[in-house]
Length: 100
Image (cartoon, rainbow, N blue to C red; front, side, top):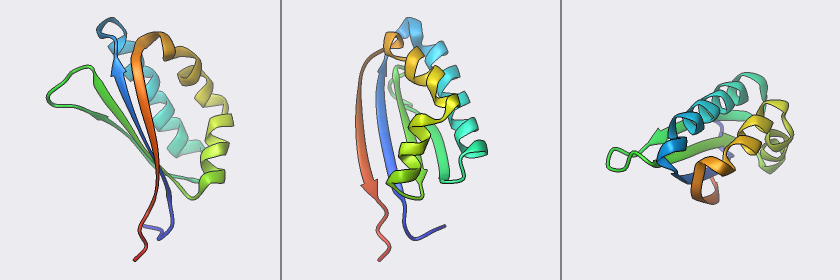
């Protein structure tokens, strides 16, 4: 695992009626990000055991530039454009990996 990384934790509060569509869009984005983006080290969709309408994306990129490239990738557009109507809210946090 590379010492440096730019980590994105995005937490989504899902509308119950939009859950299945959100999960499909998130799975596609995750799969295609890892497959098609050289700067994407990993991308996981995490689902809460306690709350079926809470989803978290854990994304790891080489650096901020790789994350910015992700936001411009063609496969990101369906997620970006399709999820606002499916969620009640979101929180996004950015981290660096401690190389110590």
